[in-house]
Length: 385
Ligand code: NAD
Image (spheres, rainbow, N blue to C red):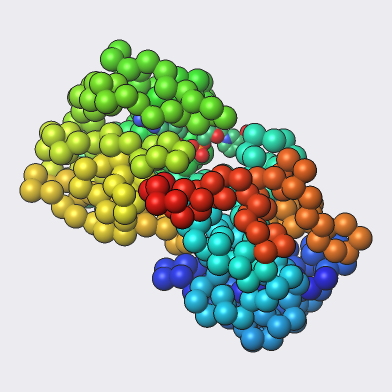
């Protein structure tokens, strides 16, 4: 079986789905590996390193003609889509629930689509394949560095002959994977860190990282299913925003990471909360999206300074800005998933398997992932998802 890694083409995407180290691992499992020329160059993995690990370095056209399985980080770009052929498999972060049209297109081409973002994350044997976690870890780390770089003062307490600098006060809102990594990173830089999540069970994890957990009196637990949060009611949201504003006003740096599956990100920092912050404070919104983020003023990939001197950074694709570490982790995730689907040297699609039921989106010309199929049916019926 021939497995290929492509060069990503999305703007700003510097990651690569397979690094030379994992090429060796796939070769040991009896797979042939093809690498598109330049696939890893933006993550500092040159073609020569892939060749040394045993991959054949080829053009995109050669790759598309020869490969049985194509590995990507994000969606196949417009340069690759027309080259894909019936019976081929594409594995990547395809986000079928936000882009069901891509799934329909791949199904129409007879391509089997496998999407890492559908992985059942709480299944112990899926942990080595959990790319959402590995990439959120990288992004949470980088969010703190971005905030620290923009902040005009020190993070640690420094005692020097020229005076004593007090440590920065950093607040992390949302303590899932990214938030916990942000706490650890801010602590390692010497900041005084506090954190809040609407799932109170994260308190012990927050405290074990040396941060203070903020408990709101106006909002109780909003733990939802599968370890995720549920959406708040309007009344809960307003109470949360009002009570959080008092804590936010005292911070130097705020990093927001809150997400609710299938919903637009909750608004945690209102215009009023931003107005109450001191000049020179910095907000990094990791949830910034075209639909809105956790912060009133944020837009993905944009930095603005409010009239009262607060810098609001709408994080874009932060994991792609740490491409070496992000690619190495992603490559381990994707190769673990791939190898779990290989038997006797061939890919075996079996949607009765708990992992495959989550990740296999299209197969044999049809959209087989129930949630994606339902979304497409709703769209075709004129219902907006
Ligand atoms: P996520 O990206 O969906 O959300 C980030 C955080 O935002 C969550 O902690 C959530 O509770 C919080 N949040 C949502 N709405 C909020 C609001 N209004 N106010 C404050 N906070 C709000 O979460 P994630 O990082 O993907 O992790 C989700 C869960 O999955 C966690 O429980 C994590 O431990 C779990 N997980 C488990 C495994 C595993 O078992 N192997 C692997 C990965 C993640």
